[in-house]
Image 1 (cartoon, rainbow over the protein chains, first blue to last red):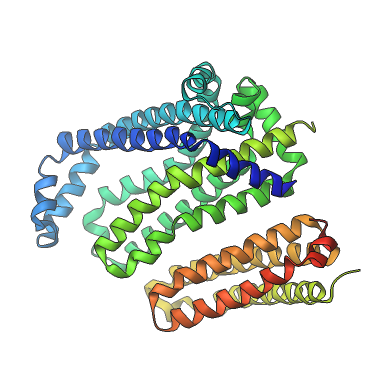
Image 2 (image 1 turned 135 degrees about the horizontal axis):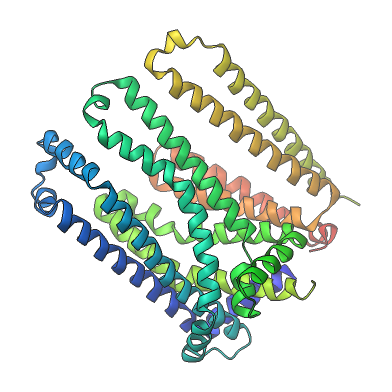
Length: 288
Length: 132
């Protein structure tokens, strides 16, 4: 049956390469939204940054860098607000596109994929999925606060810290530990809520019933879910091949390799793996 | 009846798990026995690295143990996890090739070993044992 899931996903993508469209649009939208907010931050706090980076002066005058960091620390409230705005915006974009690609992959597996119809369905599932994504983002963001707090502390005491090796080591370790803990938390949540978006979009569940159903499906199929996560990891790793293969060409090789890897991710890896998840969910949810 | 090669792979898995737990113990002990005064400012960093290393070895040991047990019992999930881990091994070996020098040798050895094991576990009699 696992072979059938893999084959079904592969064939659905081959029949309907159009399943890649929501992934491409989501990637471009998130990059554009993030870039706009970043530009806003630069314009409001450090308008001279583009000139400094382009001229390469930053490496010549470290005191200027320290002054910029101090200015960032002074505007930490504004940055926190913008971070929340960015989080909400990206969550909303992700929600809409996620609902779209789940429905589209589901339709592709049933041989009836249509971009417009899938988008109509995605809009109708936006709210319950957005509430779920928000819950997920808030839990992750709460775990992110100690890191922000630590970064603020570093910025505030930058003069003292930069002069003492022990302080640099101490803050470095704290930063590393919190980042590891955050990564573990996000990985655990992602595993626990693996099937929730599929329950909400495919079965039309509300947020809480979707969470319950998603966890129920997971609890009865832990081995298959672990296998699928590993398989998705393998596909993701294989999609990163251009980065490693072109790295030896130097800086531009890395840039070209990364760009190719991102495009492969959007066009090939993500649509196929989503079809796998949808097929696995449909197969497993029948048993509960 | 369990194929002989699968028995060997499962035993190697159990040995690997024991090795990982031993390494976890060594990391934990080294972290305990080095006096912080000898490490100066780097003491917290060394302590952290030893702790993280120890935890990682415990995790790898547990993964080895679970997969080896599954292989021994002929569980289909163990066959899948083992196959994917071997494929991950091949992909990461491929990534070593462009590094040159020792990376090429390591990469080629990794590809050959993982490739042979993948070839073996996908033979019909082995797949039949696992029911895949």
